[in-house]
Image 1 (cartoon, rainbow, N blue to C red):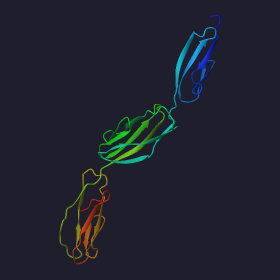
Image 2 (image 1 turned 180 degrees about the vertical axis):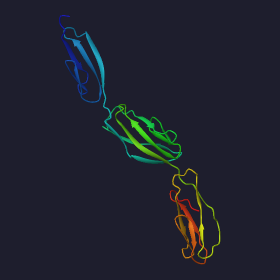
Image 3 (image 1 turned 120 degrees about the vertical axis):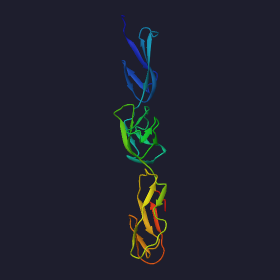
Length: 211
């Protein structure tokens, strides 16, 4: 062609501007770039361009999260810039026997343990991690002694059983209803200190179940 001069235009110069075929993206949105022959405007070509904004940083609201076995949870993340348009995320769990996570960030806690939760943006180099601990709460507390008699000065070991068996925190707190009659230490060892009747009260540390 003798005359190779062309004219470039943008359908939305707030989104894209074009100069000699060089396009500059100004803000998110869509625009059509058109190039026409300078001597015959019916000879033209068009290109639709979408301007997107990617996530630059992503993070969990908490670095360590505790959840209960059997529950389902949505784990929150924050990202910048807040007006990003490409917000698709990929989730994964380091141990799917402990917890699983779906594409929306919904976690299912399957058993007691710990797993690392990872979320990535469409650009794999932008990601965040947090540690999730799945806990099992105490539901039942049983003592191996219901009623007994002691002489003053005698000791007695009371054994506490916390259920279910896979409970995370098995700590039991022992107290005496009357320390003039008996005392009890943190391990459940009772000492008879004086005449009378008293109760040994055991309580789970996590949920306060008593016996």
